[in-house]
Length: 108
Image (cartoon, rainbow, N blue to C red; front, side, top):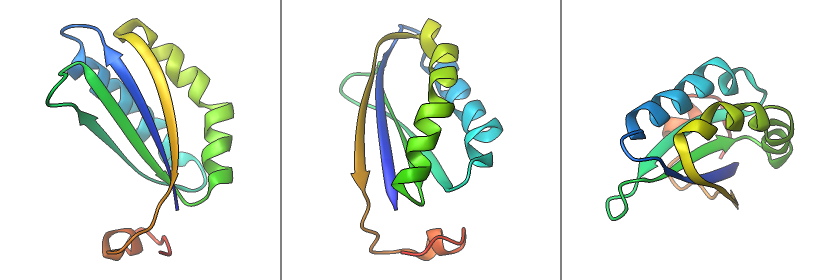
């Protein structure tokens, strides 16, 4: 499995709207993409405007296709809500407890 971490500094008082937009993009677009498994949104406890969106993909190829084809459109929609970013990091995942993911049909 493959994970994309995308971090942003969100404009003041825009965290809820930003998170709602990310969730809408995930539900309307990403979930329809081949290989998409899940997304999670994290807001830093130390820096309340720092938001990291993690998306899990079956393969690196599928994550790369999303990044090339869809991410630029998603970023354009989010740009009015962000002060800086995105900062992207990519990870290969090692799953020790795959019961949740197995229900989605993803092999560990």
